Length: 498
Image: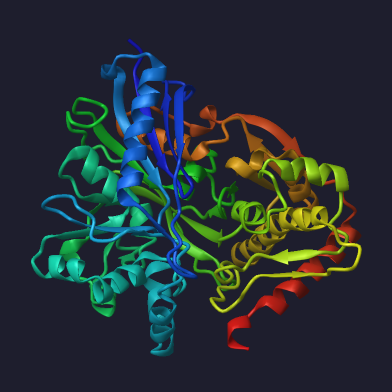
């Protein structure tokens, strides 16, 4: 009987379960859409029960599709949207509040107050992160200050809080409360060198350590827990790999050497550069984060540039402006019109993330003329993804002192051939698309398998290239268009303070 690894991927807009064989080939796959909730402007939430039900559903469907006995799943990997926070009663598993998404900006005042008090450098030095609404700690502080049931649960020592990985581990096992280095490194509460919760940061946010999960390496032969017989797996299977989605993608893309870079095109876009065992602190707006780690050894770090709105910009055009029938239509439209005709979109709907970190920036469409058509705006939305990526790549080059010669890509947006060619043109480097688009799922499957020595040796043998996009745009035109993009970004910055 073939032994397999099950990989569970809980993203922002979808949940997926994939089953991989010993050659890291896909045996089965199932996915389901996740719903986002917008209670107020700037607030973004998700239903914890719905997330859990989606996880259970995709596991059951993937197992059914594989037509395999459950006994041949030897290990499980879990990967997830990272900074999204869920708090629940550890006695009965009932959530105190909806999950607060990484995109949510309700904690802006908390962040601004801490910045004014001079804590930005302390947080950066310990966590590698910028003081921003993006991360978990301000959300936990908000919950403590605004949700009485949670506050009461904390006082009675009956509360758990963590990112989505911890919520899923708890529910699949029935009792385990755990996370990994990569997820913990996104909370703004872990010292990334000591790889543990930091008491000074916990005191700063007034968060007691007993409500937080225990931290383990991403590839963990001591395991995060075992699935219960009540789970869709119906038996006790070890959860041996847990990773934040972007770090899992870096591993799945086989970016195992310092200087290698990947970009995942999803709701947002996330560019990571492997920096080896060095915690390289950015002077140009990048984040420093934990990338990999196995059994407390060989911890690898990365520089990261996080972009909030890329794929979701197209969703905005579809759902809010009604100028797209579907996101997939953007490729056909771009191929047909081949230009934005000087239109630029800066999708700073919840501020600008890397490399600017401006919570007061707001979105704009500029360069409109009487001849502008909706097709030009759609094209400009695609270009905005490519320009934001270039902003991050240039910052990484400055921080690392290395010229990036290629970019490995994955995620739903990477299936758009026109977008990938546009990215090659705007960056001026080769864009390499992997054979497996869902490299996030692959990466955490590799982590889970490595803990059991199921996957061994050089991980590059599990990586395959599907297509390479080479730059075709003249350099002079590329630089001219990019200068205009930077001009548009400048107009969007600090808008809320005007």
